[in-house]
Image 1 (cartoon, helix red, strand yellow):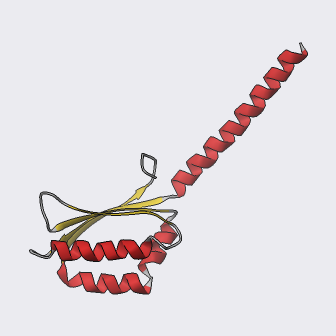
Image 2 (tube, rainbow, N blue to C red; image 1 turned 30 degrees about the horizontal axis):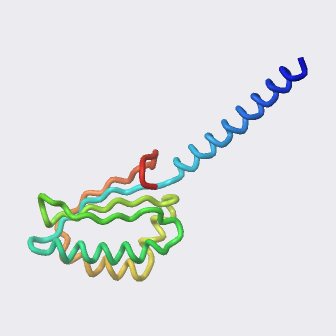
Image 3 (cartoon, one colour; image 1 turned 60 degrees about the horizontal axis):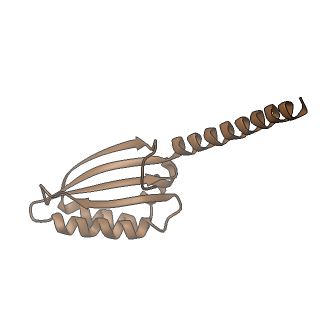
Length: 129
């Protein structure tokens, strides 16, 4: 009888701790902030824009809250540079945009950007982070 009660007690404690850990993990995921962007360069300027965005990646990778900053270039349209970002929270992302080095790169890129589509996102999971 004592073993059975003890087993039930352990099961309840383990279940409670596991539920708390899962809940904390889910809350952590909800707090993360993502951004998907497609930036379109003027004709013939796709490689230049990609280079600028790689420089931005180097800068933000050292900032608090930057979890992922991925730069890709479209295989079907060289003028499109695709950016995938994951930040600890929206505030960390906003802070990155006020960094002097980032602002300088934004000013450098502006003249060659002809379009942009960006989609803020809530991180919900997946492989790679």
